[in-house]
Image (cartoon, rainbow, N blue to C red; front, side, top):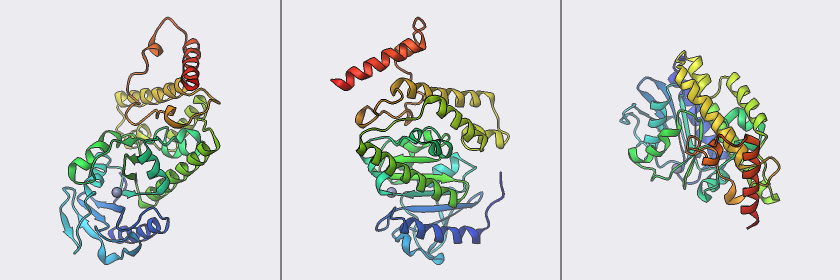
Amino acid sequence: MSEWLDEESGRIALVEYSRRVYAKGWVANHDGNLSVRVGEDRIIATPTATSKGDIRPEMLIVVDMSGRKREGTRRPFSEFSIHLAAYRARPDIRAVLHAHPVTATAFALAGIPLEPTIMAETVVSLGACIPTTPFALPFGEEGARPLEPFLEDSDAFLLEGHGALTIAPDLETAFLRMELLEHLAKIQKAARELGSVQRLDPHDIEALLTRRHRAGLGAAARREKHGHVEQASLIADQDATQQVLTTISTQTPRHAPMQGEEMRSPCSGDVRAPLPSAASSPSLSADTLRALIVEEARRVLED
Ligand SMILES: [Zn+2]
């Protein structure tokens, strides 16, 4: 694990990126919150009830890993439990950023999954899945619970009916991930308006995920890097990736339009869910099954 960021640099980064989040238009009123972890039991955070465009160094608060405020005159924000859940689940991350970027949040409100697999860059940077975590009121421990199952495998999340969250080893990366998430949402929305969105070919997605792994991104690469390689967890990662690829290839044939309700996310909890029973039938070849599913999908679309 890398050394802790010095506290002064953490404070400077928090002020700078709070203002950048505001300048991007990702928040309004007192929306959004940012934090950096600068020690085993020390998190610097933006305070509640303050515009992110007005954050000054003296407004920042220090909170410990149990959520108790240790320093500062202002109060912690009500969504602090989400930040705590992220830091507890992911010792590798040192920054959490929550905002309501308009287009990505619109996807979270409309119940339409964001699809990183429509572009090469997003697969490498964000993985094959951007989970949408089930809705919870953004207060206390209960507000963080729906996020917990997804923290291990992802660095960017849509919060159903609410907004977006990114986590990273530093605030700059958390900001860039949020920027990419919102950019993807804008592109996906624009493409849907033009009539169709296509996922990349599953083989290309696999190659991109390999590249992502080599770049040290993703759960398996992280475990390798920190020397916590457990065969079982690597196999689980491979299984999850394979399941995403299988889901993609069976759900959406290449060049088929992917829009509206038929575009089911390969993640958001269904990554590990069993595939339709026909897919596991030993008596039909994968190609035959795929053709049958494509035919079935066509029929459904034409109805
Ligand atoms: Zn929020």
